[in-house]
Length: 91
Image 1: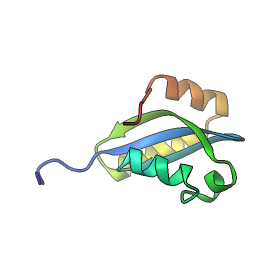
Image 2: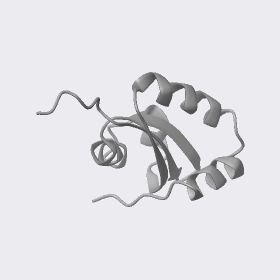
Image 3: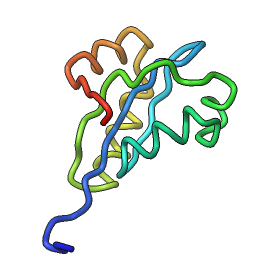
């Protein structure tokens, strides 16, 4: 394993049954599947995700956490506009 490159962190937005969900992770696919399986956050257990709308990469967890806080202050429409700039497809 190459330790010279730090793990990539992602800020992501989910479209859920009722509303949106913002989170961070260092493994986007694994985290999305956890949410979909009802093993994610309390909100996504009650409102299962319908789609991963977008994900922005960050160099470290601290930067992703700061961006997460800022995105959570936005309205749902603002969040969706942000996600449109960071489209993502899960493998």
